[in-house]
Image (tube, rainbow, N blue to C red; front, side):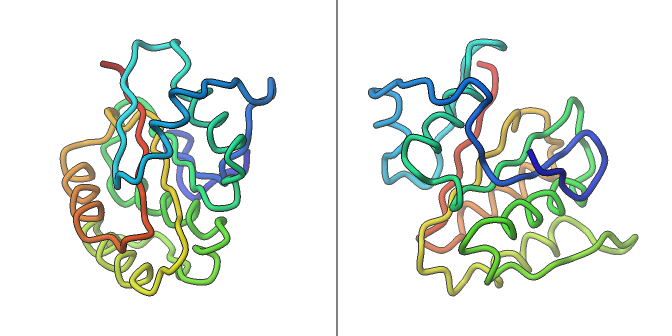
Length: 165
């Protein structure tokens, strides 16, 4: 897994299959492939949400079109989260062309980053997936900013998120 901008709590990367390879779950894969803009995968800790999402991306051949961001326990810094999202998206085939690099700055807030990302993704023609592992760990500001992204993202953007029930 490639490391992302930020501390150890939020990381972003290109989606890759797990060390054990693909775990085939055809019925769940069908549900993940649905044309929905957002799919939330909720199950108890340790039940295999992360393996499911990574296996689906690998089986569907979507690894180069999926950005993966893992949110660490108690993450409350929206800037750190959004910089990890930008970095992960820049490592996808569509994002490498559209998403401009950005570095941390004291006056840069999550709202500004989300708005800039929407501008960058506006010409998106191809499908790109953003997977947010442990989305429940985000603070309220980052969650509201993510909601803005989901509501205003171009048609080709889709979010898949994992969290405990």
